[in-house]
Length: 423
Image 1: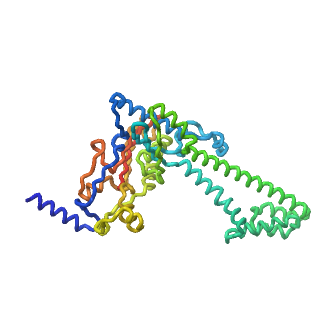
Image 2: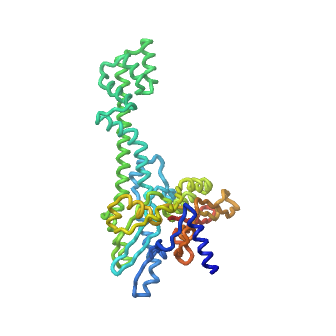
Image 3: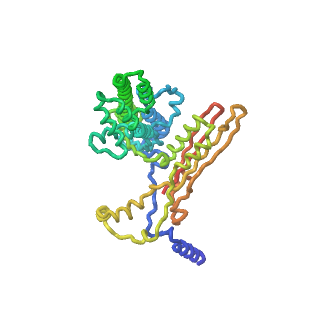
């Protein structure tokens, strides 16, 4: 009787709360996929082959990562003023980040699931937009379409002046000053020389204006050449995911597993959606420069966006017994009952720990530890709803992703642990 009274009290306390609601009768218990348990799901009759699978899967991940870390040395050297050494190239964060592979073995094939964050492609697109598209190409397209904005009035005046080069004189110099075509140091010098009657105005103006436009054409052509280089690098990055190049990678992996290979790439919008990618990105930055350890960790904490998940009482009570077709045909029902109730769609918290030889001194180095976190790592099913949750590997919650990595610096080694919780 005492137990029944305690259960009734806890239920009434949870029901009075407006934000969280536990419905033990109607809610379905969530079971994660079997691949998340040990990164391998296999059904095999040969027990001797099972001991080889962890080593083979680690070797396969190394081969896949080396394939995606490939880059074009010739084109990237043309875009850089300084040559990037091999050491800093290996520590660069401009790469295709990959998670740990999830291997699902069947009788005749192996399905490899990989979470991908393409930072290299994002960097190339950002540089294109910043340097060329916003400054150069948009202005050309606006004149082709004959749609001139208020910001492009200057360019319209400049194009009008192009037609009057042969008849340009002292008034043309003043017009060039007003339009600010050339930051008018040379124009002022020419006017002063003409006033002192040391030069003839028509000869000097045509000479210097021709020089100026030759320089302008060279600069614009150089920008176009760099633009084409970036487009080539983006194409090379995209071609890594095409079958024309992936088939060579598949042939190598088929020799390892002695089965057919099928890839399943999941493109991530943000790097913090996977704990392995999050911890690997901070690991590379710390090995490159350990002196800015706290700066890297605080920047990471500010970068991660956490959404507090609230379960509203009204949404759970409006349950209807409808078929799947009726749910998918109605957009409101699709959003409220299916899309909003998908599991692990939002990040509710993360935690990262860095331990090891990370102080600034080169001699008599000490071991230090730094921790940064945001949100919480609680499982909402067990802690707020009162539902029983599944444990992975005996001690890890089903809502958590855990990663442990290590690296070396000149003064010693260090390790990083990363946790990401979702709902």
